[in-house]
Structure formats: structure tokens, C-alpha cells
Image 1: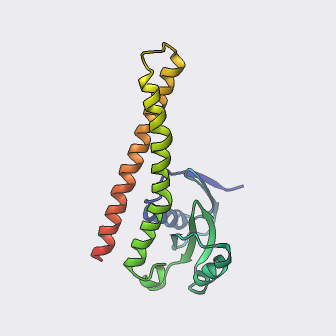
Image 2 (image 1 turned 135 degrees about the horizontal axis):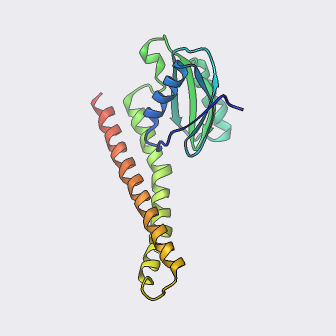
Length: 186
């Protein structure tokens, strides 16, 4: 069992913040050993050291996965695990700055952000409109017809879910736009 458990909620577009958080934990003597969705980090006690964590969103086929991981290994990155399409890597700091990056240029960073959007946000958006919105509209139209408190609770539940989804879409959309602008300027 892990020595320390922390909860941090981060969306798929907050990967840079997650990398920084993991590096800070390692500097304090806590190395990442496992991650469970939705934001439960398990750490083991370790000697505090300057370690850089990087996440890559690459869903390589099983036949290509070995080559993908070997490429990172050749550049000194330790592969940890995959969670929700993201591969987690770490490497001792102290090398040149460019050796601590997993992306060769900003175009490849932008491609990763677009892959995250296409593979995570678009399906989530479709689920949202096909399920949540449909149920919300149906329940709202029947609000006054039935005095059933369960039905009203259902409407309240889906209204809260609607607000959560709306927040996530706005947050992720803004973050994707911000990341694209940031990497295009550099």
C-alpha cells in the first residue's frame, strides 16, 4: 500500500499542472507509484530529488507500444503506467532543458492537445447531448404534470449534471485554446 494518498482533480487539459504537481511531490520526497481516476494519487516515500514528470497522450496500438516505450527509454525516461490514454514518464532533472521535454517542437505539443480534444472531449460532448440534455428536457417538460418528488429530484440531479458538464466544456475549451496560443507564440 502507498505511503501517501492525495486527491487533486485535474481535467485532461491540465496535464502541465499535473506534471508540475508530481515534480513538486518528488522534490518533497514522494514519488508517484499509482494513479486512479478521478484524481487519486498514490505516492511512496523516497529520497527527495529533482525529478521531471511528463505525460503524453498517445494511444499506440499494442504492436507499436513496445517501440513507443523503447523510444522514451532510449532518451532516459522511466515509463510508469498508462491512465485514461495518458502515459506517465519521469526523468531525473539536471540535464539540459531540451532533454527534459518529450516533445521535439511546439507543433507536436499542439498535435497532442488536438488528439486529447478529439479522443476525449468530442465523445464526451456527444454523450452529453444525447443523454443528459435529452433526460433534462424530458423531465423538465413533465415537471408540472406529475407531482412525483422523485421526478423533481431527477430534474434537479440532471440540472446539476448539466452545470458540471457545462463547466468542464468551457474550462477545457478555454484551456485548449490557451495551450494552442501559448505553443504557437513560442
